Image (cartoon, rainbow, N blue to C red; front, top):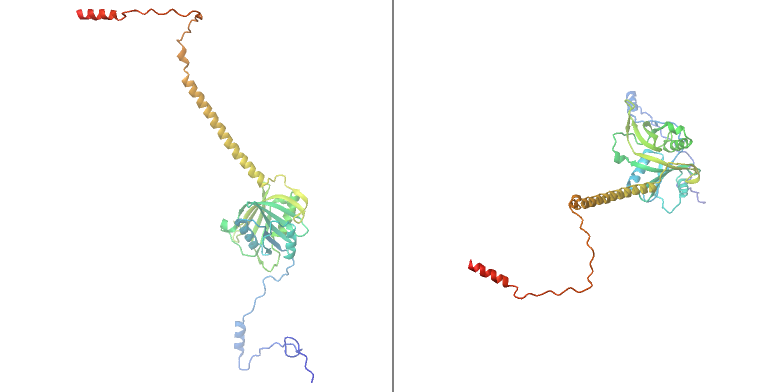
Length: 343
């Protein structure tokens, strides 16, 4: 007798589909009881958003080694605010920036926020459209995180933000390019699985002093007023590149001053102040010395002094005559004593 063929996962071949069981109301139950069961029946509500997630923007947020605690907290705040973001481990300093494109491809991300630390005090931020570009490099200044600010504003985690831009972004071409980069990077895609279908906060990008100032505000429903949430930071534009993390330079900021040059100017200003103080001390010391000399030299001391008559110079050619020694030179004294005795 031939052995019957068996499939994996079961004892025998099962071709019949499983039938769904039907609950039939028993003859003993009345119509009132069935209505009561329908009222008490627990139903799963339909999802709030029935739309389709079409915008597949994903942002990779990570950094290089050597960042401080403030930068780490800023990165965590950005990941909390952006539900479409992803994280990765820190990149080694020896690796070149083109490696970031490969990391984004592995993580299935098409936007990147990369924080680069230098000298453990300077922070640079790259915003890039991976892998074809463009990309922009900024110097990040005046960082204040959520834990540091402790503002009264608050918003729902994962809610979609409004983006508010300064009117100057539409006047110059490099600002228009940055505006499009910011919109694609910071805006939460519609119907994203991790996002909430509410709009209760706004990101503002304002331009002042040739820098971009980032703020995050809560929209209060009662009177539509704004209350700051945080974080806040300032972006100082350095360059805009055509490619991702490199390539031809599209724009270079002529007003940018490197932090090394800024620190050097501060040191020179401090050294100039020290030299000025030393010169003032030397001048004061010199004046005091001159005043002492004036006091010691009295001008009126030589008023009654008459100059001496000049005498001719006499040169002796012969030795002087010897002196005559008198005998009994004390005799006169004896006579005087005798006269005193007589008296």
